[in-house]
Image 1 (cartoon, rainbow, N blue to C red):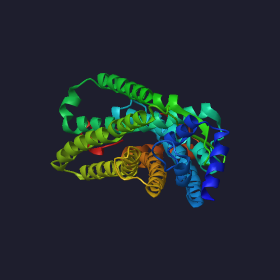
Image 2 (spheres, one colour; image 1 turned 180 degrees about the vertical axis):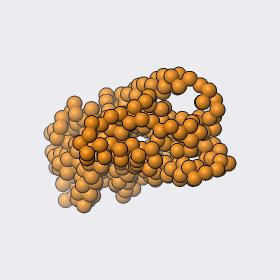
Image 3 (spheres, rainbow, N blue to C red; image 1 turned 135 degrees about the horizontal axis):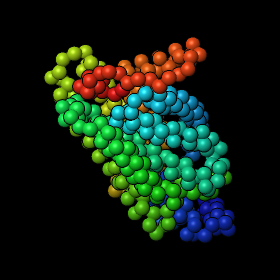
Image 4 (cartoon, one colour; image 1 turned 120 degrees about the vertical axis):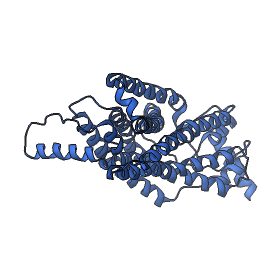
Length: 372
């Protein structure tokens, strides 16, 4: 009886998909498909599992809440930073562009929230644009974090050299650095822009999906290359750079006196901890999924399904980082809170909002403030 049923299933699917197309779907998808290997409809059908409905509802609500908080928080950051009367410092400029990168991610979250429940309803072009936006934010945000850590290192550790240097020269270098980060993020997002597309998968209740879709002959190689690139440039190397810069910065602050150094140290520890908590689980889950796909570890339907669920949950945790940034880099900063309070009072009193002046702290004091 089972043989007859499987035979009918193969005939039905082959009426709509030839063997190459069918195997291409199963080889490319990363969502709820636990089949790895050569074309085998019986094995593939047995390994298709659905995501729990409760997780879909949770992700839908979660994405919307993150969207609202990220939009509000990052817009406030942009507002306050742009209200500065004088030329922006490098850290303030990097913070401004970091907020723009997080806003770019935030505008895609409503589309992702709807797709969790209803599938992808927005067409092929929107799929490519969303994929590009996610990748640009992924690389640009972490690189701007590294830029901020490098600037704090220069201000604290090389305070005398920075004080003697030309402020205009620092500003020019900062703008060039921002342009380089955006350019590099755009280049690294090209694979997602090219290979992302909307497609209909047989095991998804007729719902359209949006994701990477490589040619069957090179799918494994492309996926491995893209994931290694994201692990190196999007996590490991930036983390090493931040730990190095902040480690030296903290060691220098330990030998200084005053209350400001303790606030700076707390903020630095919070920055590194937030980055690890938000992105480390996702990269671990992605590495495990890569090992399963490459059959370097023992694979089974259950393990593939667990890996798919882990990718969904940990990716949502990484998205949460765009909400944490305004809190860590802005609302904890003493100068930022002061400027925000002044702007709020002026608006409440209906006075014309003049551009806020920069604090008169010295370069070394600015270094002890850590961020704004």
